[in-house]
Length: 115
Image (cartoon, rainbow, N blue to C red; front, side, top):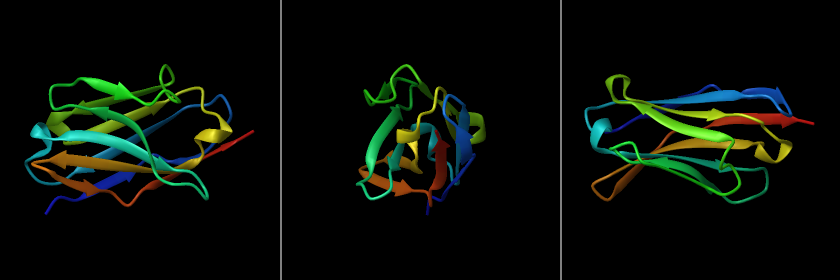
């Protein structure tokens, strides 16, 4: 069973930065695609960014140029560096691991951006 634990959320002023981390248990991390999703208050969960096992990255238009996803296979960890944060980035951020047609989710970490 894969477990994902996110950390790094918090309260930040508009224009600030945060770095989220997600640590995965088990030995499949290096062959898995990793993603970040978010759920703003009162809205549906939306995709933010994805990184392939080989390191190719993809971003939602709303975060392109501001957020950077990266991974460290030696640490079973995926990161989301978030810069130039805006109030509309306020959400619960979730980490996703996708491998062999199965996906796993973390419990989420709250990010709040004040204006």
